[in-house]
Image (cartoon, rainbow, N blue to C red; front, side, top):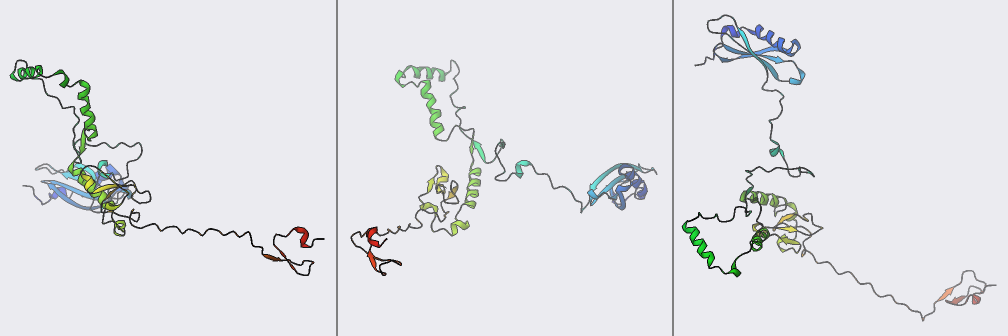
Length: 299
């Protein structure tokens, strides 16, 4: 059993440990003695403060030991270790766990691990096709006899068999991996948090997206709770929105008032209005509008 009482000779070897630390790091880097720690029987580690400004809170650890029944203490190891209040770098986090939405830019490639829980194997058609039965087996005999009675007009050609892949592509198949239920729930929670019924925009909206004419439905299971906004004036234009989301751009929220129609202009060309002359030579008389210039008293 390891003793927690330090060996007397190892505990008294403070100067030996200091000289070893100074020889390794330099006299300017080794500070005062900060205590010791028992590592085992006749094994003690002495701690000295690190005087380097870049290593605040770090300390030099010098491990000394002596053999059984020996009186000479020797140095085993010298290392710089962080203390309780040391300034150390944060714990390393893999890049895949440091990614945030929006970090992916043009030209960036984001590899997806093979065991990504958001994905599950899909159907590609490459694993289809029945294996050929062994020659001479009952299955081979039965298949040969069945093919003998198939009319030529019912036999599928190679081009006809190829249309199965086309149909599968239209149904969303043909991909090596598809969205798993876990990945589907993650996406739904993310979309509902950003454009859901509890967002500030939806709380102030006059109606929800479920009754908006700008909502484009989506297929699959997501169509029961989500759609795509197609209103260019909405803050969610082109985004996946919850059916409970809403904004002021709802198609039925308000009726556009009818623009007032101005009255038609009235043109009266049959009436003649008199016009007073300014400083005329006819004694301030008036003439009729539209009179010839020779009638206006010009000399």
